[in-house]
Image (tube, rainbow, N blue to C red; front, top):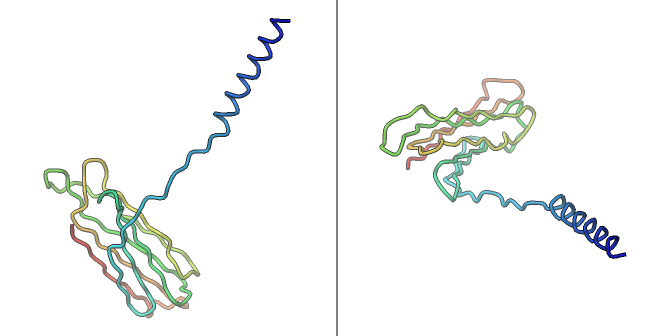
Length: 143
């Protein structure tokens, strides 16, 4: 009888352990962002953001009041190391969507030990497949 209680207790302990670790869901909060600024041209609005925690992550989004055939955001960066030497920039980021009013959020990071010295954000949109109605907005932010 004693042995059966020990086996039952062992099975219960194993079951509780498995249940505890398999049902745990980690909670990740969204990275806080700081709005760097907004610029517009016609119905296009481009907004730049940076991470509130550090200056190594930048993002941008283009929006339009009108549905665009293609709307896109491009981020071009100048990246330096801790000594201020120019390093190979993080991959410039392009993000776009067809038949939309929002390009989505394009994000770029500077990499470990580096930071952005300068970023340049462009948005462009075409309407009714007509390139004559293409608009671009430069938005710059210096650190």
